[in-house]
Length: 195
Image (cartoon, rainbow, N blue to C red; front, side):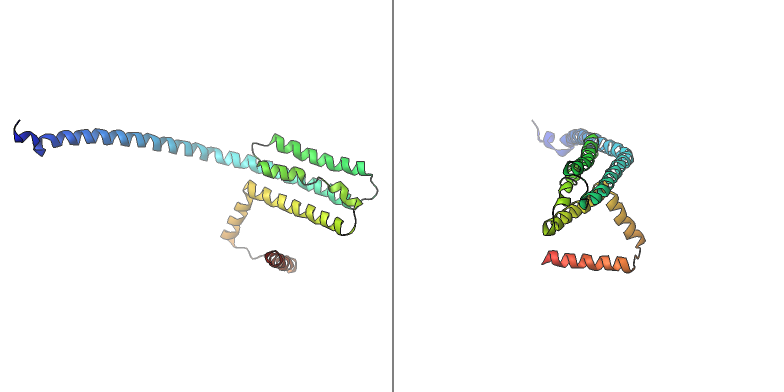
């Protein structure tokens, strides 16, 4: 064996060719992976508007069920004329309507949100027969749960994010005596919660 076979001019072209094939194979593999990623992402993006629209419809319908139940709840809180079983029957109609709706639309609704909304009106029928501090506590708990349910629906549906985006773009200056009073109460509430 002579020393000329170890010179780079003899083995370098072969090594370069081998590395080219190897590098081409690797790039081809990653190219296919990248193509598949882009294809799946494009598919998700093409379905996203349809899914968003359906989710929005479902969340709007859930909010409507809560508003309907809220009207009944407001009537029942102070109604002494109905019997306990009549109050229970009226509340149960709304609880069952929400439970069935949540089950039928579980594909588009968060499970925890569904449970919260289903439980929202449970126990409302008992408020009319309680008095004093206990009654006020029950009413406050119901109002808090209702507020949270509507907040979670707005968050889960994506509408809260859209509203925040619009506010950041248009920067509306909403003001008035009622709005100012609401802001004061919110500040007071946050100070009390922070204490």
